[in-house]
Amino acid sequence: MSDRRGSLADVVICLVWFVTAGVLGAVAWAQLAPTPVATQTEGGAALQGQQLELQVGIDGWFGAVALVLGLLSGLALLTWRSRRPELMVLLVALGAGLSAVLMVRGGSLLGPPDPADVLAGADVGAQAPLDLTLQATGMAWLWPVAAVAGALVQLLVLRRADGEEPGETPSESDAGPADHPDDAARIAPGRPAPG
Image (cartoon, rainbow, N blue to C red; front, side):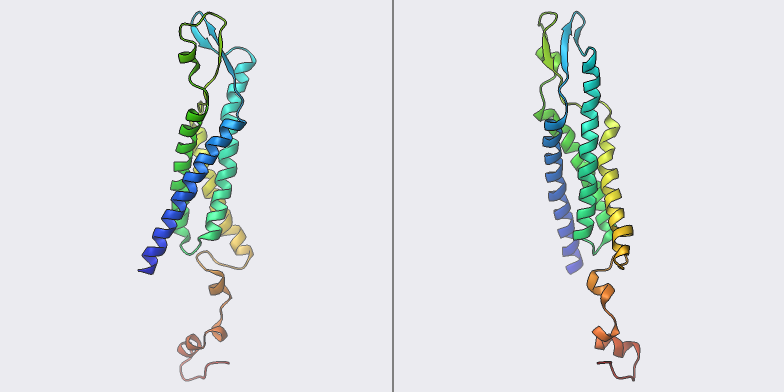
């Protein structure tokens, strides 16, 4: 029963964490990303010259925010909730996917509207800021990849550097037979427990 309750707590914690991280990521992306300006031409709204380079910056800032938040999320959650590492790595991967979706959708809501709609019917030469849309959709995968990488660094590098094995809590790895007289008696029946 306590295992089921602990697993449910892990799910709820990951859900709240990644929803919050996705919303914060969308806000950060909207604030940090450049705002290219589309110009109305005879063929419709278009980016010209340096504005095309700024459009690439929108995807770049998405990737930077996703990479940082994903790594921090994986490290923090596996440090905090480490009793079931296999479950936590799975929850981190799924939760980070949710964060990616929320960040993409949130950025679209927080950014300017589609310039094609704004400039519809406008005179040639009129300008409007470009909406915050992820052009390289594969960048969304940075969220789960970075989060799982952070989780694995915590499990396989940082925890082992502290002398713990994955799945152990610090008290389990430090405990020896002298700390648990009943266990010592079960291991060596007929011998008195140390102490």
